[in-house]
Image (cartoon, rainbow, N blue to C red; front, side, top):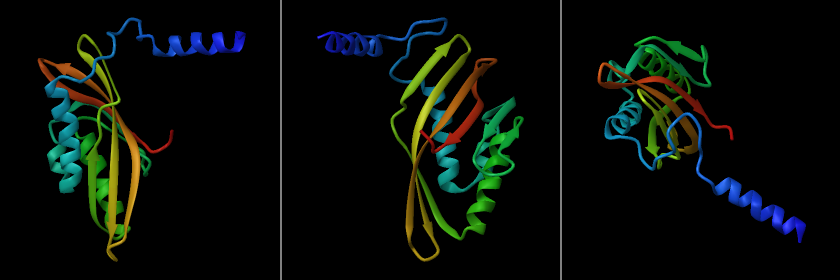
Amino acid sequence: MRTFLGIVVALCFLAAPATGADSPRTPRPPAQIVALARAVVDAANANDPSKLSGLYTDDAVVIDELAPYVWTGANAGAQWWTAVGQILAASKIAALHVTALSVSEYRAAGDVAYVIQPLQITETNADGKTRTELGTQTYTFRNVNGTWKISSATWTTKP
């Protein structure tokens, strides 16, 4: 009986809303933040680093699993996707398609926000064989003079 009660208490604790200095989780980020995350997916699907220009803060940081692993500054997104494009070409990936899944977490506090965006990436090689990878793009955003921008982005496939 004590074990059952302990499990019930633990489940109630896990289901309780988060509290703290930041605002409670909300179901969906505002439209401007959604548009930024969508722009990253669209740039990836177009394999066009130029579509990432102007989306990042001056001190932005982008982290990914390929060398040099980190890109910084206002052009971090474009530099990152240029490196990804080079890896795709060297790996003979003929096509890449990124699908954004439902945002799994959104938090905001004033002029900063945090989003976890699950993604599904499907690669098609030159022989027509496909490989699918699931992962998450974790973002932070900052409102700069009334405009939301990406301040960090990190890709991971590990739980």
